[in-house]
Length: 401
Image (tube, rainbow, N blue to C red):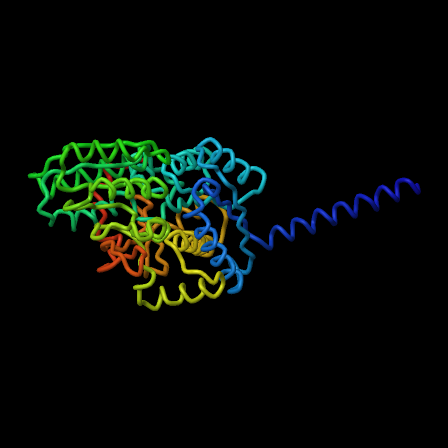
């Protein structure tokens, strides 16, 4: 009897413990976050700070319908297979309500495919390939950042005004670079059927041999260049291009180069007059951005990068979705997100129902040198909604569900 009583008491304690754990879990909502932290710290460290600020603000305001928001983050190391492994661990072991994040386009596609197969909601933060919402789009995947198509359309609007007819391209040889070049060439040729594409250079991502690339482009004698390289590759390209005079008397149009994480490392080598997309945080004077900037600088004693905006808005969007759905059921999350509008540091954005693309926009301007540092000047915010194809066109690009 005594042994049975002790066993019963032990069982009661265990059950009480389990009930306590269940109650603790009921008091929070977990989001899984995946990114290439060890591979691309220039972008992902500000990105992490951005989402940490968002989590702090969300929980200070009462969380998700009274539940605390918890973000569980994993590093994919820049490898699609590792990203899928991380996604599986977050879903199966951590029981996250949704997946968020990713940077490289090939990794974004890998996690999107996982989400589709496992029927898990995925909010892609940064990957820019058009495939993620169009040719390989699925009902479980949404994307925050303006896509290659959107940024190309913004850049083409300015590039088409240039007198240049002979164009060359330089882009990293993987999904993002290939997608960016293809859509820029398509949109540019539609606006300017008189131009010629005289050379293409495809250095491996993160491993550019800038000397031969610059030499090959110079030999083609273009009047203008489209650049899609970023990070350390961009620094090497600019240095070699400046040394060899590649950019002298040539127009350059460049994806992302106006973002501080890519512009800052160029320092006094920054080429002037490039037409770029970017983030001139020092020149944005709107209430939404002022509020974000003040909070970010107060918390981190640093200025934000574009990654900061993306990380912040990804988790703010996730919270808005979970709050509206009032559920962690993937189908209810999808229904809540389609057509959902919310504030952002760049103004109101909406997740479109037809392709799950957000209407977050980008700043377009020119590079300049100021006090020995690269800056963006003459910048104008371009709303994402103004640079997306019609519903009829999207219907042809995206698989039927």
